[in-house]
Length: 222
Image 1 (cartoon, rainbow, N blue to C red):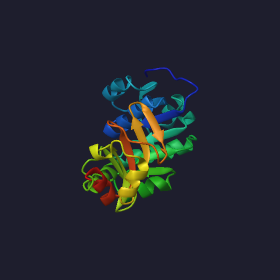
Image 2: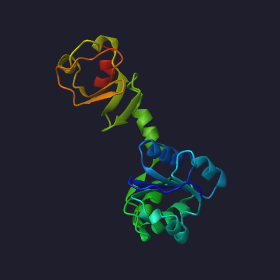
Image 3: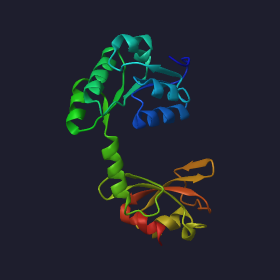
Image 4: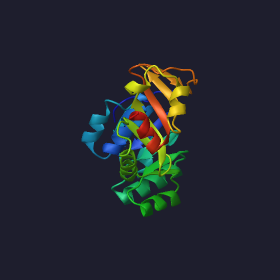
């Protein structure tokens, strides 16, 4: 066991420190959460000391171990043992038994996800399928730094303000943009959510756009 538990912050436990679990734990740490990171691998636990408040070698289905480590007092637990289907199902079940209010579990297949729901998991994620879906949808948006689809033909994209948009107001952009809406501007470290229509884009701005995929792509290539 490594690390000391801290109070006053949202408590997140991540069980399974493969690529997905480690990524979740690192981002939670960066967001200021109190992170408990568990895995049966001593090597992975040792690596987790860089980002976890508490890192411990433990079996995610061992109720006594989870209680001893304070996992039952977590606000959220992430079951990241997707490839070991039996272990992930057992872990989700035990987490609900010890009183964790919100359990997010990684699933490999739809059937796996359905079983996780049956044993009490509150939310199921399919990282590989979701990542593939996002990439496929973003192929039509050539200049997007990041993209999230909302429907089969629309989404939200993050991209650098193109040269043609610099110096133009959002009113001008939305009038010419075929249905795109600028919902956020990032200017250096400054975030400008819901910017007014008279706001003007500056060189280097990062914009968050919502609209049809075709309209977002057209905006980048006026």
